[in-house]
Length: 396
Image 1 (cartoon, rainbow, N blue to C red):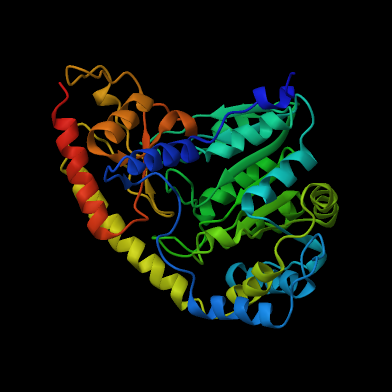
Image 2 (image 1 turned 30 degrees about the vertical axis):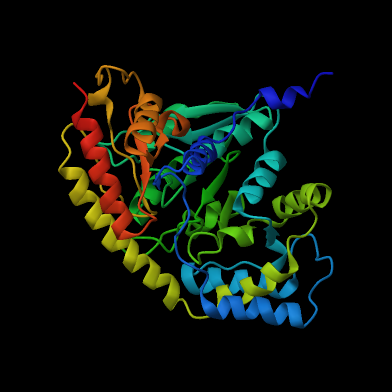
């Protein structure tokens, strides 16, 4: 019996694979410190949990509209106006089971076979694989640590061909932490104006975790707005990863297309999560800001610890909760048993020797780098980086 060929088009997410390997080592009694997963280590704020409990008591337990409850879609519009000064109507919002499904719906709705999707590196592991599932062609445009891992207008212009259908990026970026300023987005917008057939997916899931100031969305440029699909959700900014709730904001035709797809895949997402999300999006943001303040402290400490390890070049992230250092100076080194030939070897060496999990840069389109999360306690961060320093000192 043969399985579908769709399974050969894409790979398992390396982020999930590394987390799985870490769990297996823990099951054997090893003390593994997880710096691999992109998940806040905070609990969901109390007022959001109370809203979910009330929703259960009020019997919000039935099937939901495919695109989401009307009050939640209104809440998304209110959030976009309050935080981003963007005007959307509820019919332009589609709520999904996590931002990952929002991305999948959008890419499947837009991309046909052999159409090109430009993705600047480094990028979240799932971007490229969703394009492959849609039978599109991934066009990677390499950025660099020296450029702050940001795409230039000249690079964007050079990558565009008659087959380009979509541009896909995140700001703040997972894994690099790069945050595009208004001026940088305006410069990219100038290029897009020359190419009216290209859609733009702007993944803004890390919006609230910003260390340099106000979040800027490329959707603020009104003449491009009908070509832009904002992806966002509640996982990162509200510590609601397990609640699985994401959303898109876009023009009505694209919204209807994603709703049509979702109607066959999952229908509407969890009723209780939706009712809690209304309160999250319209309520007090103080808990979210307090989380960002703690991430700011952890970023500072992480950068101090990394600075004490020779051979690692590290860009200071402007958002999200990762560092993405260049560790290529360790390629070719060995502890006598293990030789580091690439970033996958580097990550596996740290997992097996230091019992610290990370994610190899190949998964993000940057093979010289490795992603480490600082969404862990300060104590665990300090313990982890001491272990990394000790393990790397054995290589020569």
